[in-house]
Amino acid sequence: MSAVVVERRLHPVTPLRRAWAPIAVVAGWAVHDPDQAQRRLTELTTFTLLLGLAVLIPVAALYGFLTWWYTHFAVTGTELRIRTGLLFRRTAHIRLDRIQAVDVTQPLLARLVGVAKLRLDVIGTDKKDELAYLGEKEARALRAELLARAAGFAPETAHQVGEAPAQRLVHVPPRMLAVSLLLTGAPWAMLAAALVVPPLLWMATHNLWTVLATALPLLGAAGTNSVGRFIGEYDWTVAESPDGLRIDHGLLDRTHETVPPGRVQTVRIVEPLLWRRRGWVRVELDVAGSSNSVLVPVAPREVAETVITRILPGVTVPDALSRPPIRARWCAPFWWRGHGLAVTGAVFASRCGLLRRSLSLVPHAKVQSVRLAQGPWQRARSLADVHVDTGANKTVTARLRDAAEAADLLHAQADRSRTGRREARPDRWMA
Image 1: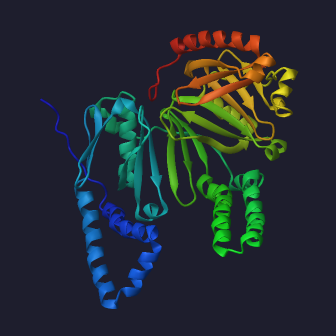
Image 2: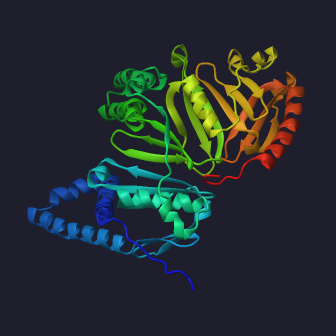
Image 3: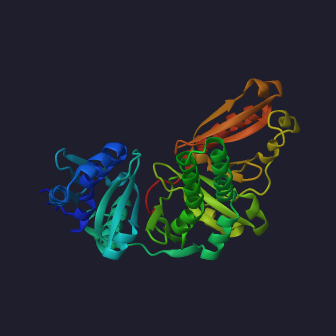
């Protein structure tokens, strides 16, 4: 006899989120044709405006209620089933053994109301499915149940497992984060451009709209690269648990992410020029099928390497990397010094960049293919590039290597990858 599947609805405040859709349609029309929208508004009388609002607001409320009423989700023996759609029905069948990350996010208004959004990373899909919104306690309980089911726990016991305990590894102090952003060149470059370019455009065109259309995006980009990053990366905490590394961050919108164990394809250690004197680095990730990309926004190098050993067991960050031969300067004058390569028993490590160094670590088991490439100028100098492709659809390149060394590296890396895949642990939760 098959078990009864109990379907559940989202939190009752969800219709407020869905009710904005009809209003957004009207706003989109106004933005698309602002001149006609302005003419229509000037023609409206007070009575017509009030009548329009009396129709629009109930329609928006009804739309929000109906979309909430026709949205259900249920956890069955093998999948998470999500049914949505008012006019066009859509049913998502998410296999539990394909779930690799379950994130809980809380925008500011959701935190005030006490609800949360559940976002799921599933192997083989680019778009995240989500459940928005659930009660905060319900979201955390459902997250723990889904992770337990993905780890192989039986359906009748998965809901009793609860959230696995976590041990904090790293906490980024707000002062360190603020100083690191001030020592990053991109916000200052965009701010300088916002101060220099508009006056030049004004002298050339004397058109205020052209100046504003240029200055506002530059100021917005500078703010996003400084204030926006500070708000998003505030109170960044990395903790270790049996189901992976947990990442909590955010000043206004709180996000609780999980880095899936065994799904990390590449780890990058980034060193901006002005950080090196302080010994700070940034750690980034490429995770197969996931949008999680930052592990630690800023930390002392020794702390960052400790976290890397947690996410890549048995991996040691190489200290010495070999540079390309000196004749590589004819292909990349001066910048050739920023490239380097090291191959250990566990990883393929490639460095690039002179002012902003980036060291990429690819475990041999995660290498999907290896390619050798030579341009005409490189052939003339007996140089070649070795490209390593990973399961996250990303490529790490060892540039400007000696051609004979590159050919040997190509065959040796293919053998190391085959051996690494045979010896790698399964990509399972809590394995």
